[in-house]
Every structure is written in structure tokens, then in C-alpha cells.
Length: 228
Image 1 (cartoon, rainbow, N blue to C red):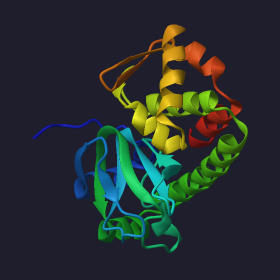
Image 2 (tube, one colour):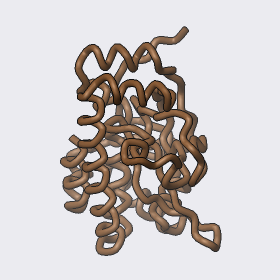
Image 3 (spheres, helix red, strand yellow):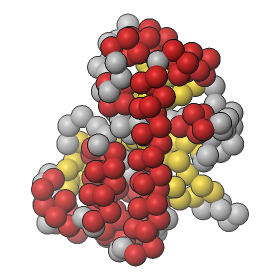
Image 4 (tube, rainbow, N blue to C red):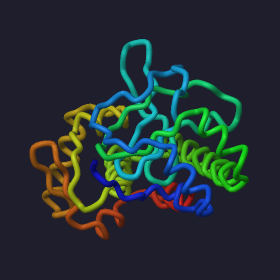
């Protein structure tokens, strides 16, 4: 059986006894790019803790177009509504960047919340940071350029993987940000010409992180700080 490193920061922040409880009760498995983990409104059967990769919570309009509301990476978990009395997914949950995650059944999550105060406290802090991320994303999508938003999302994805190269198509970027594919293609071509990224066969490589960050809007830094 393949061994997976525990990289989820929420789990790593727990006390050792709580970490051990969740590790023994959870199943770690890969997330495939494009995998729909939950449909919008579907009841949660498991809380999902990404170690690498990125999950988008998407909303779908009447015309069929989708856009990302927020995302979950190794800083948190999918199923945060459960600790506030919810039961279903707040959006279509799609693995946009492949990786792997721990799946913990709702029954085991309830037991962990009951037995370990640190689990509830840590999850509530994460829920607060997620609200901050959601509000900042709304502002960013309203006020900043397509290039700035694309850079923010590329940096966000880079933060959630190991290494500088990861699987990500231009179509995914276009969909999560509500942009035209041609717009994203032009942005990626420009960033590549500046030596900031490399793009090949659906893989993106962050070639110059520092310069890419210098072109990012303030929202990236605010969102990143809130999730630390």
C-alpha cells in the first residue's frame, strides 16, 4: 500500500492524540483532476482533508456556466459547513488540481469533535479564514483585471502542490474565473514570454515565483495570510 505524507496543515495543527485518532480512522486516496467529489447540495458522507491538490467549490448558472466561489487546499478541509449545522455541499466540489486527501467519515468526525476540543477549535478557525477568503475573492473578481485574477489563482494552485510543475489546463483557469478560454490563453502566453511560467501539454511550471507574486493583486496576499 502506498504511503502518503501528511501535509494538511489543519491536521498538523491538532494535538498528537487527535492527529492519531483521525489518521487511524481516515482513508487517504488520490484526487484526480476533474473529479467531482460532491454535487451541490449532496449530503456529506465524509470530510475531505487535502494534503496536496486543490478543490474548487463551483456554482452553476441557469445558462450552464460555472464559476468558483472558493477553494480548499492543504490549509483546510471540505465539509466545513458540518461544524455549523449544515449537512450538504455548498457548491459542486471539483478537484481542479490533482493530489491526494484524507477522507474521514461523518460519524468519525462527530466523534473527534466530541472527544477533542482542539478539533472543533481548529476547524472553527479555518471556517473563519474561509469566510475571509470568500469575501476577498468577491472583491477581486469585481475590481481586478483578468490577468491579476489569473495570477492569483496560479499562485494559489502552486501553494497547494509539491514542486513547481503541476497539472492544470487553461480551460480550468477559464472556468473557475469565469473568463473566456482565449483570454486565458493570451494571459498565459504573455506570462510565458516574460519567463514567469512555462506551459506544456496541460502542465504549468512556475518558473519565477517572486516575479509572479510581484504582479499579483493585493487579494492574493490577503487570502494567503488568512489561510496561514
